[in-house]
Image (cartoon, rainbow, N blue to C red; front, side, top):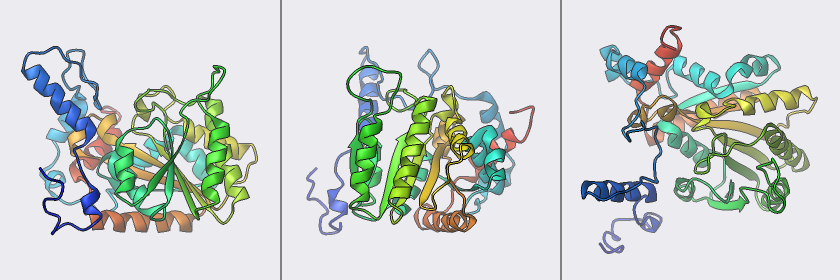
Length: 334
């Protein structure tokens, strides 16, 4: 098919969108190869599989979904999400540190989204100015590129791993500092997406010291460039499969207990995927959870994200929100 086809109907930005998603394209090729009897390995897996290769499905989640009341299946959810689900998403992001963070003055807000991808879109659409660059590690999940370009955002990168002598660290702190400084010199807003823990595609997780150094770097940059807003997005799509699923909440607490003041121009936000953690990929359920010491900031973020969702997908699936909230609210099911 000619890329020029339909150009009379499509605006200039739409005409930059070409090709098919790489992951789903290769998945289709894998399925075709298997159907033809070839030995093939699926290198695009983004879901939990049994040893047999079949999709792994959490039986409790499946049962609750299928037995949900008809109204929870058919009705719209509130635009920002079901209250019980929003509360749950905050707990899933912060774990046991939630109460401590709230007690020392951190405010948290959450907005439901269609999967972790929806949470990433909310961040891309609202936390960076059009034309800006978003800071990523050079080895990152491929669809980031499309999410960002779709919001007219570019990409700046720093190395996934430090160069030179092998150490226990998975953070190139000097490159991170340099990259942040470069962006702060040319942008009024700086956002970075960090897929951690359980980085896709490598599976690596930053160490406790790495997390501390990383967040301290953002705090220092925020204090040095007080006219530049800093947003650190933790893409926690796989965090519940990691050894330290709530390590970032622990690190935030540790820094605050060390007497480090939280800059007004620093926001930390978590992109959650309930689709992956609860094996309900097709029900597309996630959340964007944001944390900041100023309640006016988190209240404003909640409003903006709710409006963005309404203008994009309207409301996220009620069924999935109800189901996971019901499970975690029942000790016997959870």
